[in-house]
Amino acid sequence: MERRDFLKSATAATVAATIPSPAPTAQSNTPIKRPESPDMIYREIGTTGERVSAIGMGGYHLGKQPEASQSIQLIHTGIDRGITFMDNCWDYNDGISEVRMGQALRNGYREKVFLMTKMDGRTAVEYNKQLEQSLGRLQTDMIDLVQFHEVIRMEDPDRIFAPGGAIEAAIAARQAGKLRYIGFTGHKDPAVHLRMLETAQKHNFHFDTVQMPINVMDAHFRSFTAQVMPVALKQGIGVLAMKTFGDHYILTSNTVQPIEALHYGLTLPVSVIITGIDNTQVLDQAFEAARTFKPLDQAQMNSMLARTATAATDGKFELFKTTAHFDGTAANPKWLG
Image (cartoon, rainbow, N blue to C red; front, side):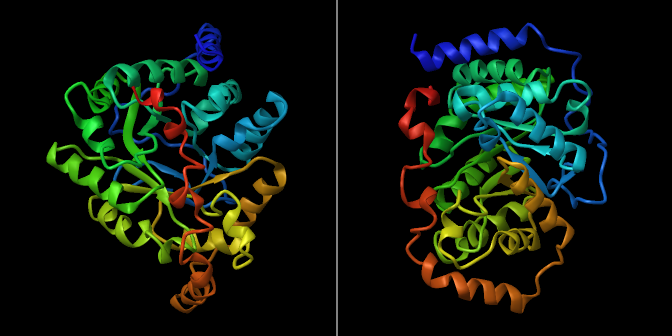
């Protein structure tokens, strides 16, 4: 067994033995009410009826602190101040992101949040294996939203919806009460997202959420905002925005500041902006964006888009679209099954 797999298996086995009482039980179509703070904006996720913070904590960055206690404290501070949407993924930081989030959600914190994670598996067998590991790491019997991760290839929808594909496992897990909602993510090309939505319709399946890059440069290059968002909204699918800063590359273009980039995303009809928060300064920045937010008018939006147009034309600041730098499943095809 490779070291990466051994660590994941060992971690899952360890935390599964200490799972506390389960999170609030509810049917998949029954929204759960969570505490809200005047310091945060809250929105509904598509047509689910679930109200969550309009800014969510990105799970990848919550596994990067040197000590677990630092990650846990950051999560606690975010929740205490009003963030209720937690993002994660089975493969983030070799599973450490889920482990630390699971530790942070003990002692009543699980009940305060809408918990999301993602699976790489394209087959039912691989999906089930990863889901059980995630449940163990996150120390919960039920995950609010599980999304198919990195739908970045034109064949991904075919694999997921094929006989024995991951969609069968996801539906069965929902029926078993292990998860409540189903969505998918991707960052490569809007054509892949549209094909995923078309494939779902052909199989009479309705996604609850779709996660995609939405930022000040996306409008100019392979635009998810222009091509995918209208389709998702028409179908009542909650739009989860990511890559607001393009990791950090969009900010290095010196065409936009962090707060106005967040305001741009919040002005659009998204349910949540999932952003990487790896320290208290970035957490403060997110709350400052929420505190000062007023929807941008068309002139302000146009001005920001004009400012970023030249830098955005060839996608050089949206590396997740133009390179394999962010494609974890491309570097690890065995995760797909």
